[in-house]
Each structure stands twice: as structure tokens, then as C-alpha cells.
Length: 330
Image (cartoon, rainbow, N blue to C red; front, side):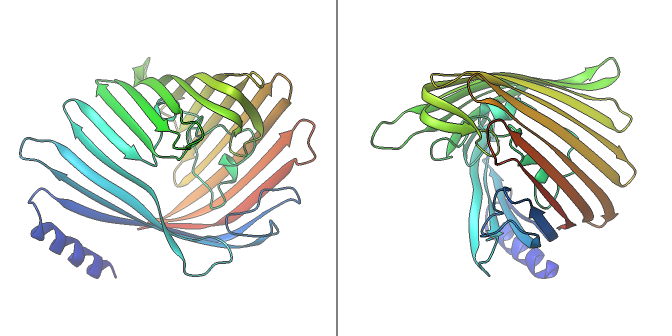
């Protein structure tokens, strides 16, 4: 199978422009996932009881360059539907870009400028059930995806600094609006440690919507504004840590989010943990934590285990999720 893919790639390259390149990468996982009675349903499933899980993802990337040095390209991920369906495949996370001395313009299912600039989680080895990033207190995408999830982002880097602006358009005929974001970040060395800092702002309009991985922190009633900063450090001894804070303003209710994360790597073993809490004015706290561990067996094969726990004030929907299995990278 690898020889067939490589041969196909070579034919495409020789048939096109000399600078053109098409690459393939694959990812698969299998194992067991589960959760408590109130846990969210896994994708494509009608129950959250302990069950077998498998997933497959093929990423295709095509890039080229003009005679004047302007780079351009496209990427797409082809994934097997999760759950009870069998053999159905979908295309996701498609994106196209143009890049040059002026910076990079990217359009598609991508990070907006706030998510691009902020580092919400460090040291995460991942889990096959994404337990560590799907608890109610996790704030990963910020305000992205509130409309059609098609985002245009321009970013420019100079030395250790980078800046970006983005927009996501609401194509609803009943009242179109725009999701704007702007962000800046710095990554470098400070006092012998690797350091990263991000600062970002995002605003969008919504009647009512939820923030966080489970959408449990409710905002809306008009304009929603997010102002955040993140700081992360690599201590060059296998230990990394980070903190992210976001102020939240909306007509429905105000609040803030605090996220803490840390990870440690020694040899082939890696473990990471994160905690997040939304402190909302009228709703109370929406919080959760996640833990993930992995062991690298070499050759692209890893063992994984994950756990997530969520606690929502005033709700009976507190839940936990867990998973154990292997991932394969090709």
C-alpha cells in the first residue's frame, strides 16, 4: 500500500509544475471509550455506555510555488464516520492558502485569530476519546464556528512575533453579521526557558450560544466579546506549563474563564493534565479537568489513556468520560 501511494504521488508531481508536491499522511486509532449516565454521546453513537471505538483519517496536502516565489496550497482530511455507520467517509478541515513576503492568507475550517494566538493547553499527549479536551471547563475554539465555520485569516510573522486578523461571516438571510478576531503572539527564550505569550480579542453576535467544549457557559443577547491572554513555559527538563485567562462580556451575562495546564515527558512516556472553569455572573461555575497519558512504542504506534470530569453548577448533568487504546501514525 505504501508503494502504491508513493508511486501515485510521483506521477502527480512529474505531470505538473516542477515545484508542485502532493503528500499523504494517515492516522488511525482503536480501543475502548465510555462515560457516565450524563456523559455526552460519542460521535455517531446513540449511547454513552462502554463500547469499542475505531477511527481513520487520511490527510492530503498539495502545495506549489509560482516563478516569483509565491507559495500556495490546499489540504483536506478524509475521515471515516464514527459510530454505528459503517464505511461512510467525509471530507473535513479543508483549507487553502497563499503565502509570500506579505504574510499568509488562509481560508477554510481553520483557527480564527484568537485561537491562533492563544495557547489554551500544553503538554497534552492526546487520547482516543479526546477526554482531556471535551470536559465542560475546556475552552479550546473560543468564539470560532459560531456561524458557518468558514474562516478567513491573515497572519504575518517577524522574528519571534506574529500577528493575525480573521473573520467568519454569518450567511443567514435573516440577519447577517461577522465574527471578527485579532491576535498577537510571541515565542522565544527567556532566562534559559522557552516562553510563549498570546493576546487576543474576538467579537461576534448571537441571540444565545454556549462557550466551551460542551457549550455549557451560555452567552448572547446581542454582541459577545472575548478578551484573553495566555502564558506558557518550557522548563527544558521535560516539564511544561501554561495559563490562559479570558474575560467574557455579553448582554445575557458576563463572566470569565481560567485555564491551567501542565505536562511532563520522560523517555517514551508523556502525561498531561488541564483544568478549566467558567465563572459566570448568573449561571455559576462551569468547570472540568482532563488527564491524558501516552507511551510511544516507536514506528508511529502509541498507547493512550484519557479521563475527563465535568461539574456544572445547578445542573444534574455532571459527567465523566474515559478511554484507553492505541493510535497509529503513518
